[in-house]
Image (tube, rainbow, N blue to C red; front, side):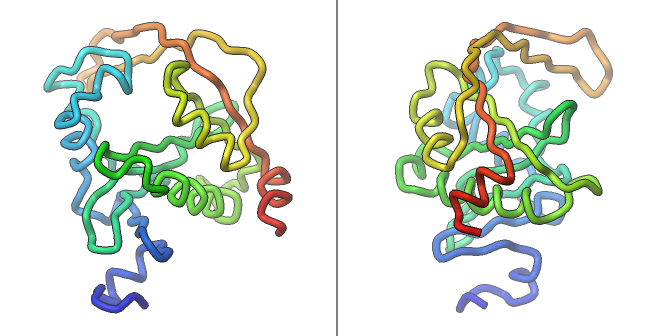
Length: 193
């Protein structure tokens, strides 16, 4: 156990030397993602939609398969998770501005890949993960490639769709994305497992 951190809390966390991943369903920081993306003014850039209070409220991250990323002092620095979807599960990652370009994203993504490929999500073993990155987000594209993801050769448009909890009409906007994938076999070769 890490010195200075409550051992009971550590049992529900995945840790390395610099960061802690806390199961978002067990953590009281479920609104930190919404606060972080709002204060950074990145809602529209990240989702391709204008920020509204209603849309911001939908960002409460407390879903199974999602983790809040904390630094070793317990400060919220982002979130990472695997979203179950057909046909393939997708890995998602967000690091708040002041923690970017310090290696936290790569560390969190590496820990999440290990969890995804070696723990069951929704009762199934994951054999392949995908990720979509905005075409203009070159830093995230480099991150994906440095963690062993390969780029799908087709770059296409994707429709981001938001629905409110009340079931209002969907709000969509086309966003050009670069699509990546990594298989369990690719991950194992890269990790020498």
